Length: 230
Image (tube, one colour):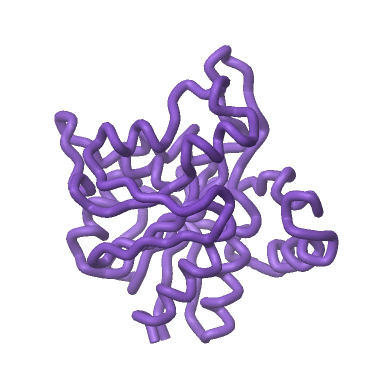
């Protein structure tokens, strides 16, 4: 069975344009859906965070209105409570790519605070992309790709990528408050940005890079991973 690295944001807030801190973390569904699919298939999960901090779930993602109903929210809470990997993350700086068969980055607004400029994450992403191993990134987590730029050039330039769109950020009322928008930054970095409908599941596979647009895309992204891991 495969050993999969989950790189999770260590941030508990996102600094907005006016300097206020918007509470956040990782988005529950983007952890629970792939975690459940992969562990049920017998694969091993290891969580890594910047500094080895225990990651924070975005409490908004566990509201029934955001999770898709009260029962879904309760199920996600149960998965997070039982996932011991979340309570003993390794330090991102200590990760050895050769120890893993695939890498996955869940989103939430947290990566917009820390992973977008995290040098250890940038080095890991650059190595993972070059390795040919499956690399899956969903929703806001493609912000981490920004840390791969060297003199303005990223190895992800030219790859077909999807991520949380400007329209979706606008729909939740945060586009005008953000210091920068993910879609704009990725386009400016030179990726071939593509999208599906707002809030609809949408995934893109380009070589060994697997990206998903939004929380609803996390489960389909996991299914794409399972195809190559199995």
